[in-house]
Amino acid sequence: MENLSIQGLILIQLWVFGLGLVIGSFLNVCIHRIPEGISIVWPASKCAYCSKRIVWYDNIPVLSYLFLRGKCRHCQRKISAQYPIVEFLTGIVFLLLFRSVLMVSSGTTCVYVFFIVFCCLLIVGSFVDLRLHIIPNEITYTGLILAPIASILCVGLHDLSGSLRFFVDSGNQWIASLLASLIGIFVSGGGLIFLCGVFGKLVFRKDAMGFGDVKLMGVIGGFLGWKLAVATFFLAPFFGLLFGLPRLIFKKGNVIPYGPFLSLAAFVCLLFKDFSIKNIDHYLNIYLSIFQLL
Image 1 (cartoon, rainbow, N blue to C red):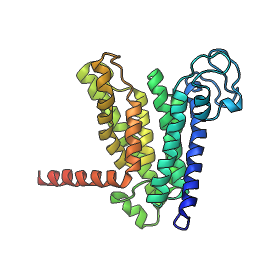
Image 2: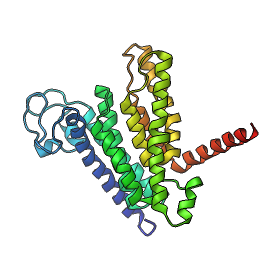
Image 3: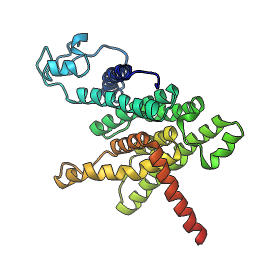
Image 4: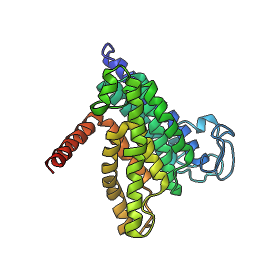
């Protein structure tokens, strides 16, 4: 990246953003079809009302929605605003991760690709959760399987300082990376949310956390490692309060899907990876100091 001109960097970032828009269009298909148990490959996209097949020039990400003024070309029924939102959001995610991983942190292409896959899983899971209040197993199980594989193929995926440094110094980086992923999945990822759900049920006498959230947090821990999973765990409630409180005040329902807030917190922690890890290390050192005094 250092040898590229400014014009070259701009063109690459525009290409990355455009690729994100296209992938976002595919994610829309996943969001609608996975909960229904329909193939995400076949048949071709069609209008949800008149069942007319959508031709390619009506399926250009964002632009087609604007050109058609948010309506089907054939029946003139409104097209959900979710389509351009998901497409634009995915483009932004692709671009921000490109800048964060490849330009600022000097990470590898392998790390970038797996983080992109991770964020795509978060986007699909979040929008399904918003619509149906479920996080499909197809999303969480795929993430739980891919995370350990990604940690072996890309040892730069996780922070390997601290207790895992022994494996790094002995030349077994892939073992350290795999352990970081597994610890993230079972302990600081899914484990934290599971305990939170159990505690909430004891206190409020009803389910405070769905098991889909537990598995999603396991996916987050598997891809980001235990430190960023802990940071996500503490950051997500702030987003939940920010967006959920007005909903409760205006009585627009008392069931608030938590998956989108976990996903947003995970993405923020990923973008500010070094800052988040530094703060977790800081508070961990404070906790250990207090524990030693006791």
